[in-house]
Length: 220
Image (cartoon, rainbow, N blue to C red; front, side, top):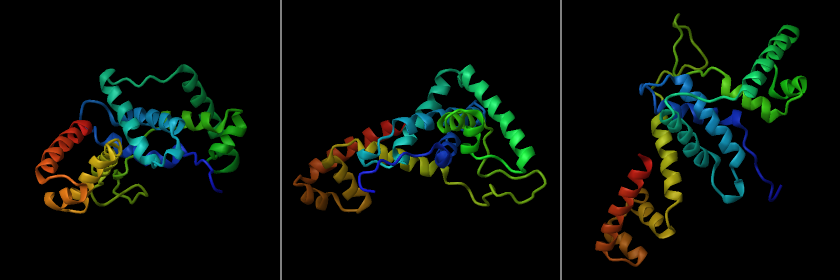
């Protein structure tokens, strides 16, 4: 439908949380804490995202997720989860166990919402923040195949960096963004780039150095 606003679902984008959390492995905070903080950021991104701005959700969400994970380091490695959220998660866990005993399968978020009286968003928030993370590259102790096993190195850092780079470039002035696109995506020389933008080769060289330094600082 034309003009329809697309609302992203948090559960469809948990992979982004894994990608971002993996960037901070082995830095003194357990992975499950990193993942939980990333889930908080994902939920904030879902609530604040505006599809009418023409930006992909992943491009918008990654900096928000990274921000929550970095906040975790500033706060000393503690994810603050409200008492009401913990109580809701415990209630949903009991309902989930009852449903599995009665039906022989796990309930959907919609079914948990109907059984608990909470909204779908409230159920998704409780399940997302408190569930234990599953590594996309884990291996079973008995070396048995798992649906989460990936036999090659996961390109999580590269993908996360690319999404962050796109977000940083989207904030640049159109002419600056075009300069970088011509130089590094279309692989034009500084002279050809200068001709397209109506600048001198020296101006392109100086501006390019400033933009690269600005992007590097933004990504760090």
